[in-house]
Image 1 (cartoon, rainbow, N blue to C red):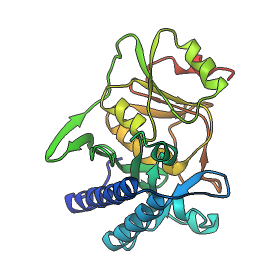
Image 2: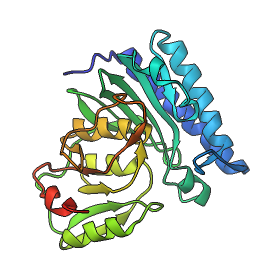
Image 3: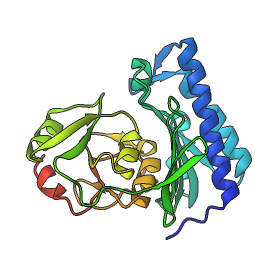
Image 4: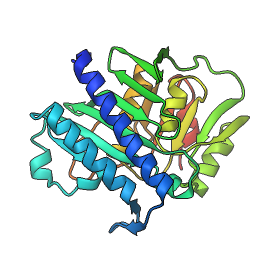
Length: 269
């Protein structure tokens, strides 16, 4: 299935992502307060500023397409289940990295059609690099006026370059990494992990533990369009979206090369 994204829509969304990134950096530079949501996850004024900007921008750009953002995720399942096409947004992915001021956070915008992420945008506010992709239409990295097609590293060289979350380490993940043999572990935050695999600078991102659908949708589109996969660890099925009342994902493995023996790594964990 090829995404039906025209140039005007694509550029409009990229502009919205860049504007959100600029709003985040304004808060980053001037200081911010930290609050906590019901699940104890942190939220800052940067999350909320980017949320408002993105929702308003997408609503103006595509008034017929609903928007589901992390900061407006209370929409009932009875409403969401009717959606065949919608925007799925994480206004500030990597809030913990933002709070730590390590620069590894992103803006995520994905268009979902019939459960599939068909258009994805990941913007890095600190560097202003933007990755975008259309299902069936390739993946791209844009820096200023320079845009380059990207693809995964297939076959990967040894040692495998493995992305590790800076904020979500666990004993299960440590056991998985031990099974992978010789690897080079690279700490990386937010959806930037998917993008690094997509451009061939990393090879694998294993995630054993919960994430939300807005954490993965944009990055999955970029990675799949670049030749990689994002697979549920229990059954090897690519992630689908808005298929159930809960918005939490299960364990998964993101791979630049789908032929890697990921089943051996996750078995029994």
